[in-house]
Length: 279
Image 1 (spheres, one colour):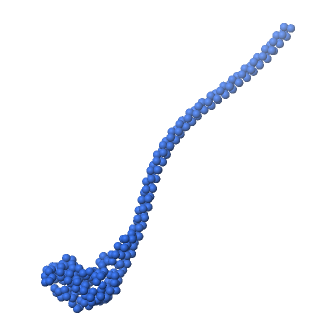
Image 2 (cartoon, rainbow, N blue to C red; image 1 turned 135 degrees about the vertical axis):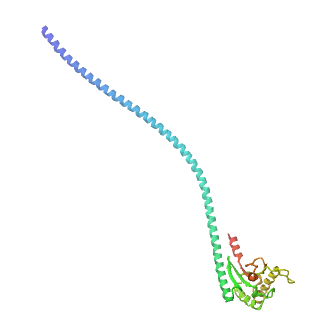
Image 3 (cartoon, rainbow, N blue to C red; image 1 turned 90 degrees about the vertical axis):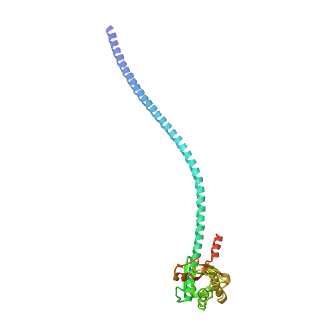
């Protein structure tokens, strides 16, 4: 009986120990598992903390950058507003300048057209005068255009006797040819100028070369008006005396060139004045 009870105790004890070991093993597994989970959780927590810190730093950096961007944007907007004002003013100024340039360009083109037209008329007038006068020696009569003005120079040896302001018959023939061409241009204004050399002149009633140059100019004007019908309303008589020489007065040849009568076809300035008034 005792043996049976002891055997039963031993068997029971063995079973209990085995279960106890199994329980210990199970507890150990649970503990290890808990420790592993805890380690994992701690690691995850640390990672989250690190991530949170990094994100906090990133957020802080982004907020700083955003503040700088806002400040720069405000400055840019202010500059843009100022620039817009300047650009608007400049644009208006440029617009007005361009309009003025356009008007001036048209004005200049009008003047150029008028000048080209005038130059064409002058050249036609010169050709007509040369054709009418024919093969006359250059030292006796010279026709030229200078700066848009037509000049007809007639030597005094052809027009007058020495020291006189009486026109010769030969001179009247030349003036008649000139008058024929001028009459075909009834709107032309022209001036007759008398020129002398520098040798003093005094024959009563004339006092000096001023008087002589004026008397020669008026003598030519009278012939053009009275004998060839040119309108006196388009003629001016002027004396230049000795003060506009074309050659030296130190030689006989030079003095002969200086003694001359010049017919100047005057520019029609009223046409240009009308252009100015319309602008």
